[in-house]
Image (cartoon, rainbow over all chains, first blue to last red; front, side, top):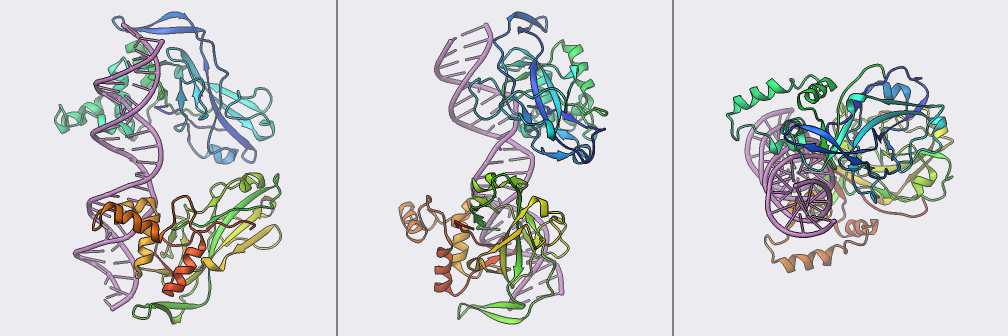
Length: 219
Length: 219
DNA sequence: CATTTGACACCTAGGTGGCAACTT
DNA sequence: AAGTTGCCACCTAGGTGTCAAATG
């Protein structure tokens, strides 16, 4: 899942132990298709039968509120699959559907049913947060060059596909990168994506490799 | 530290939480030198002033007795240094000294003082095990070809230095490997090393990269 | 003279999109 | 036509011993 979801949490009890988990739930019961000439997602029938949502338990769990609040919590190890029979503990999604990632803060004393292959429990001791700007649509192939480019330019592992010096001069490529993306010091925020959504009318991501990144205060 | 120390533990309380830690303590207060023509370690004066031993807390800590007993516990991430000012949390040793690694099983409720840069606590709730056959001498350069070869042949990361097919034919190299070392299925045990000690009169290892591997039951 | 340091080639391990071949 | 799969080159990140040079 790239870009990874990143959150900062305040207001926890420093001495209380918490799990932090993420799950990804359907936004609606529709299936979508991408219409290339109008650059829009269109409804294309009803959703496939949903799979019970799995939980991704953040690997730093179990930790104290103090520990969680001192770091940016990154979900960059979360893996997605469209294989409904997956036994690797990955989160299972359908292609061409809309999804909402959610962050759960779970107090240790209410975590009896916590398991990667079970839905996240609800109720007392569990707080759930979701950010509408992180809704995304799963795809099976990139259909928008700016998304492809985002993923290539921002992900260190995709450096081999960058333009730099191939069909551009070195300096030209650097300048262009800086004109579209921000300097490396600044974290990419959800505004970057919503702006792209407005421009493109879409936001999509690929099978086994999706998603949204942002940093927010005051969760 | 290679080969890594590996242990199997039985007899813990399955529901009790434990830390498992390793430290490495001096065997005596002597400094050694290696006499090449006699293939022996000789005393070469008194030891350097000892540094307070650090603890390597196994990364699977904290875990239940049940969890610990179900796996082989490997210390392959333990790192050594001879830099007394180290701030990476590595275990600090002097070159050309003899050392004994120790394994500590620490019940959670007696682990108040547990820290990577502090000595392992002693007393109730802490059990310490040491295996005399894992004593080793630190060195600054390999002086025995069979040790060099052991480290090259057994460590996946050193595959680039293996003999296979360089100054031998492929089959010849394979046969020779199997004649001296065991088939890959079998775990290298301390007997392999003690036999080498008897033959060679030595057992030594290199700075930033040492040590002994064995698997034992009934710790 | 022994020891330490840094650059190096060579590995393991795993995360990228591209692409051709295949399935549906 | 759209989706899936496997293989690929290309990366990151880090664990090996070697060697030459610097250090003492």
